[in-house]
Length: 286
Image (cartoon, one colour):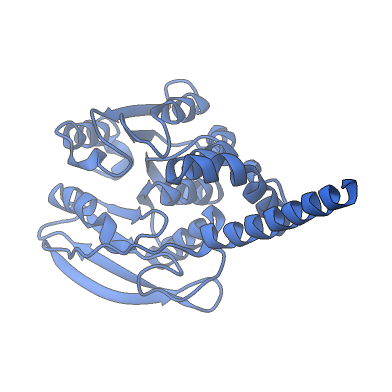
């Protein structure tokens, strides 16, 4: 009887390990949910630029109809593509900015790349910065925001202002929240194991790349944007992130009633963006 019980426990442990490994692969590879939206303002240039691993990124560069006030690079989040940022870019375009939107590797029609993560998102942002060749305003959403703050820490001289929408403060906390959002039972049972395998695969503590730990290194003004009803990353994460920057450096806009991706559709979003730009007009060359 004891031998049968031990065998059963070993079988369950083996099944758990195997399933958690499969889930660790899946969460880094799937799903892909591209958005269909097209720029409908200014002069649109569709091109491809080199990526760090020999691949390429699809890029839109959209010039305003009049003189440009500066350049805004917008980075989408996990599973999406450059089209996801068209609505936000349109706002900056109407304010007179050149806007640049790219799809990260393994997203949209950019080249494949297995095991994408925030560090890989930041590499793609750096590829865009290298291509632009002049200082920019950087705007990231979700995983793109995590990539944006990582890229900014390594390229502070290239970034004038930083916008972080739908970001998180600590990586492991955010991943556990994300898994619970997807399915609370899967998140509770397998979330810690998935994170364990990620640490092992990347040979590092993934929490070391947490935005809240990087925030003190960031020198420029920052605007944190977050949906009040975000179920993936609770709004408390945004307050923690804002408070991780130097005192008075970061502002926050909490979008009433918005979820993870809906902040830009709330009435207060455009005034918040405009106000932030006006308060820091020297940084954008106005």
